Length: 303
Image (cartoon, rainbow, N blue to C red; front, side, top):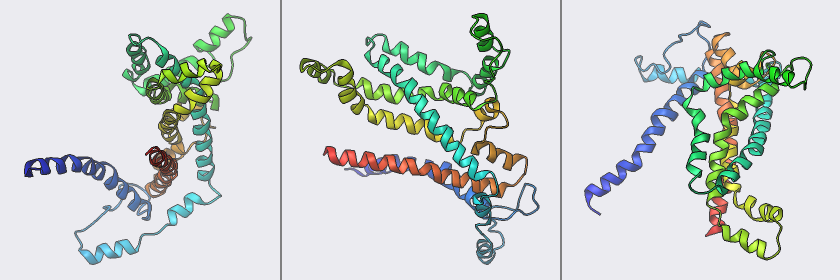
């Protein structure tokens, strides 16, 4: 291999590491440092995050003053953060199950559609992303409010006598999350189902297997990588969701994203909000590590 090719290869490999260093590791270290600091005057801006102008001795003294007091405050049972973490995990988990129930038939129908029609169906799934996320969530206020399209339609059909209370409830949050994250579930599932070998289903039918049994014993197990990828893509952002619970869930919906926003903007405690963010990242790393271990075992077993 020539020197130019060797340096070109090293450059290609270095690009993603530089990207992660600049856009993930450095911002994370800044947030981590703030979470270990103390409020200076209880109002931002604070002292410089890393002040190297006073020399190495001052830097070591600053490091010695770091503490985990903010984490103790966040994890104490006399505040709402623990409940917010638990509520976020529950809402994100239920939303992920609902997304799977809604997204799987859509992806299966797309994979079984004629090849010429599949690009159009894919475009229909992606099309909502061309509109602002905030505008789409705001539109659901007009649909779910007591005087919205849904209640007016149900009353016009004679199905209900008075408007249903959907807006500012957890049900509205589930509707908003399922609608907003549906493409993240459909696309990985479609990718897995579209690669499915149709001769396996034909062989199962020739051996007397019913369509339902063939789906459950062949199609669904082979689509599990898509299920896992879609579940992760939906569950992780849903845990930290802020816009949907704030606009559709009302004040009674407790999620960690809202608590973090309140701590940061209302209470003006950057240290506590940084500790909440770091703990949220730790919580979200766990399912990612589990998924990677499962994939590594599957790859090892497939060799």
